[in-house]
Amino acid sequence: LRVLFTSDSFKSEEVRFAKVKSPAEMVAGTLRLVDDHREIKPGLFELSQEPKYMGMDIMNPPTVEGWHTGREWIDSGTLVERINFASDILGNTELDGVRILVDRLMGLGDKISPEQFVNGCLDLTGPVVVTDDTMGQLISHASKEGDLTHGTDVEQSEFTRRSGEMFQMIAATAEFQF
Image 1 (spheres, helix red, strand yellow):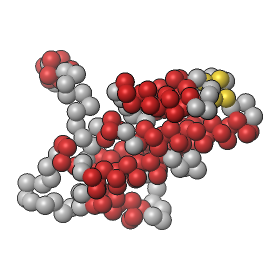
Image 2 (cartoon, one colour):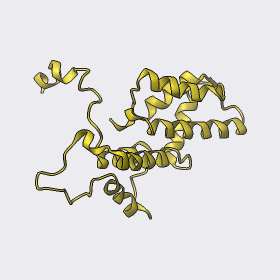
Image 3 (cartoon, rainbow, N blue to C red):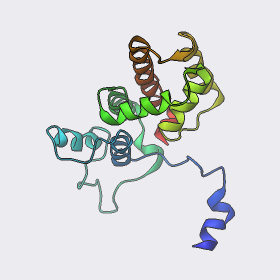
Image 4 (tube, rainbow, N blue to C red):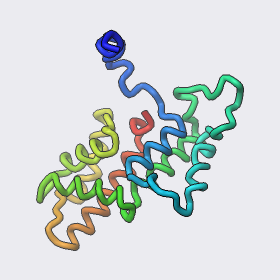
């Protein structure tokens, strides 16, 4: 293991974030992120069907060799399903796990700049490493409404809304798929 973990290939920037999440990884990872996977509850069957809509019918591979991996998971139809699923979950600020993410963001300070806000959201949803162009667009969107504060109930409500919106935007990025 030492040889494997210390090899140049293991640490190469070329392979970092190069693997596209399979539909099962996308669904399970998103549910784990918002801590909405620990108990049996209504709607669980519907969640188990989400990978099928993204092209991966669990326990029913297309051939005996299984599923192909990589960018084959993403086409115009399945990408929409992936983005919709992740943004619906991450944007649901009523979920306890999303609420915990929002509370962690509030822990960054009493007044948070748009740059701090975006970086905090990216760290909490992955961490997700985005291109400079994507980062610029996320910060530009966050800057439209200025700094974030959470001292009053109204400010907390607004902070929560903006956090859910930013989580949804991050879920819609190409970088979230890796």
